[in-house]
Image (cartoon, rainbow, N blue to C red; front, side, top):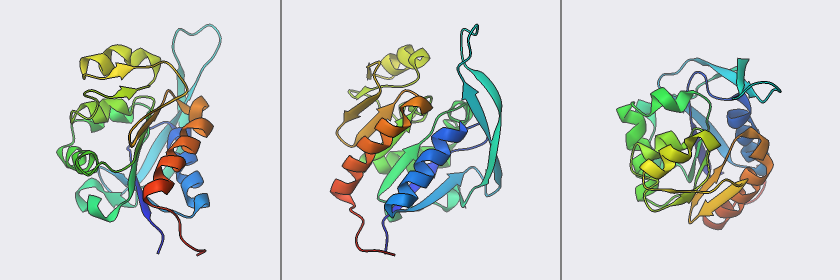
Length: 191
C-alpha cells in the first residue's frame, strides 16, 4: 500500500502550487489526497509575473475536487503534508480544524512542504519558530514576526520542513521534498 500524502488548500490557491505537487507525488507512487474546509469543487487561481506590475497578477485557474474536509482528516494516516500558497492561506489559517492537522504533522516531525504564502499557515501554529525558511518574498516580515529566519532562495530545507518561494521554484522544491520524503516513507514496489 502506497504511503499517503495530504495537500491542504482551499479556494484561491495557486493552481501550479497545488497541481504540480499533486501530480508529481502521484507520479512517484504516493497516494495523494486534497483536503479543504469542505468537500467541494475548489476554484484555484493563476498568479503570474507581468512587466509593469509591482506584484503578481491573478486570473481564474483550474477547478478541482477536494477529497476530504479538514474535519475528516486523520493526520496519523499520512506520511507527509504539502501546504500550497496563493490567497487561500490568508483565510485558512483561521480554521481550527486545519490548525489541528498542521500541529499534528509538526509535533510528529513529519515531512512538510510549503511554498509561497503557505508559511502563513505554519506560522499560525508556531511552526516557523526557530526555523530557516523561504516564502514569497513579500512574506519576509511575516516569517520574521513568526520567529523564523527568512532566506530568499529557491528552496530551503530545515529538518523535515522544505520551503520554496513560489511556483517558478516547483522543480527544485519537489526534488528536495521527495529526497526528504523518501527517507521516511519510501515508495515500495509497483502499484
